[in-house]
Length: 402
Image (cartoon, rainbow, N blue to C red; front, side, top):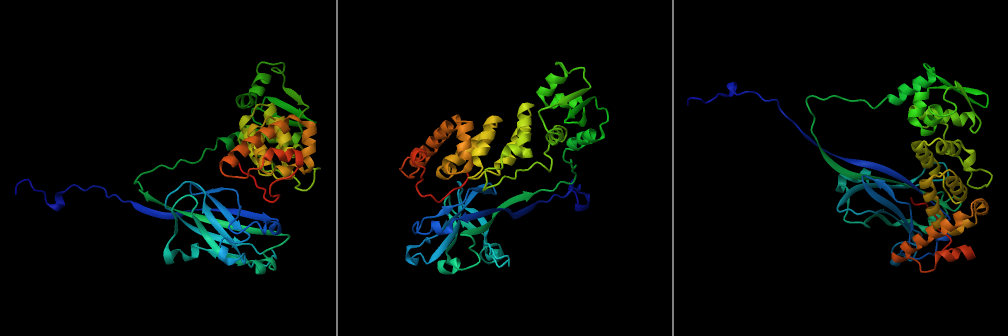
């Protein structure tokens, strides 16, 4: 037929392709249960819950039942479950639950769903509150005489692998853009001191810098160097910061990162250590003084990891002094949820002496937590009464939620 094209005459079009990729997004959580013997007797079906952790866009929690989950087991076994703690429908996941051997021999008790994925596929959690785990995880009498229990403490590691699917469509032509390296370049500028036009004398130690860089990063430096009494100076003496703190602040200004030395190491058993003595605490105060808001948040995030019963009052006092709003809120919530224990800590009286108004703020936070808890069907006894009698409703469970 006229006009018909034969196959060898048909214009060729570049082939296309696509690929469906199903994989797991994995995340782990360590759950430590301190005071196991005190948790015994809380009742069948009642659990100690971990803090929430996020994996694959969903929130999860570990539930430990010291008296077991099933009434028919007569508290002969402890039960452990991993629960979907956020809204979700038909969430498919793999799980691994490990009870750590604390003898140092590495004989951990491991239940892994990852190893059995080919047998029945991932486990499907239908809705919020769905759980995977073991009603008869361990016989209590054997657990209490084993190396898994040490100093009245149990340690669990939990790994969740959320199944996700995506279509991978590779393109014939692509351009890879590397991560920004502007921080590295500015860091080299600081290290080489090339073009520096200002020197800071900090307790006899000299630091060369660039006025324009400092002014661009800090409104306080901008005011000081381009509109203040120090505008024409080539050297400025700094009397309110230690050299290591000033050096860490310059590192952030040029590189937009924290130095490796910035860390929080607070004692959990002594009132002698204070966040104000750590580099991260001092850097937080410097960030507040020089209006470095991102640095403040980075320090708050680092310090937040060290909040516990014995440190929260001290950290709350320092956060209030440094106007660290988010860190302060976390401390208030933690103190409200663990009130009786916090009141017995070494730092609580010091907090009341230094910043008496913080006790009022703690009361308001407690009132808010109590209102939420009661509306959710929690205990009816007023948490506020604990400030007067120093007691709590069960005296056992403490945990941080942010």
